[in-house]
Length: 349
Image (cartoon, rainbow, N blue to C red; front, side):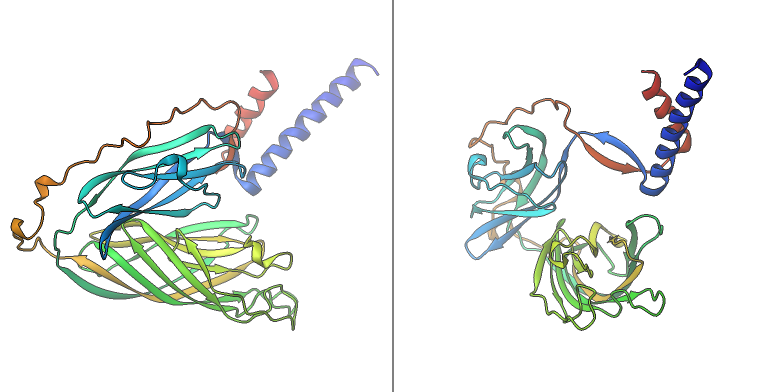
């Protein structure tokens, strides 16, 4: 083979590789490598008859072999904390009757039990100081759908306003219904329905869903009535039809609160499905709104100045080991020129 043929072959190989990178980025988004990370999305403290209970919502991005652990000062020690394998998840602990500020941590481990990420900058206050609330109910509706036909996952945000203050604790209820795209007179998961109830409190949220009888395997006549399911980290959830394995929950539409402020609630919907569906969520949300500071006598309970920060003495802070090549793939908006630059860096490095 002469030098011209070799040069043409090399050029063809390089261009083919580059074309693959460009097309793959266009369809799936630019893939980058990042270290595993873990988040405490919210934490709340509530009085339960004779003790305070603190709950934290933990989420992480890492390889499927990783697991998480939660730690709440005043609860069980970290070594006894259960392994958490589903993200997001909720971890709760009885911290006793004492009013205090308590640290809330989250740790991410690999299969060897080595800490790969941690989140230890969160503090929640437990107090029985009386507060007055207003209650306000608002209706809402939103539609989760595929925004880019070539991509299986989509997301967007919407707002629920008109509460007249910052929502603190909210209860969601309603139903969802699918609108399947008709292709050659074949319905794809069309008119599937379900009901949901959800709660949100200081970033901790969960929902219980009752999907109604339907052909969830996309096989006409093969109806199924799934049991109710709870999904931590969301206020509404719809598992969608799956011919391969409906129980695995690969396809879904779901809602979660990402911010609560004086303007109201900001929610994000997420959609994952290879099919082009529309999922309509319709419901109501009732929230407690903190009134202006109410009259309160220090004699009625411990003064705010007496609420002290509890020191964590059960567990020394574990050491975080440097990442040794383990990483995850995340999605970023695709850039043609970034792809070009990255491609040639790999070629000539």
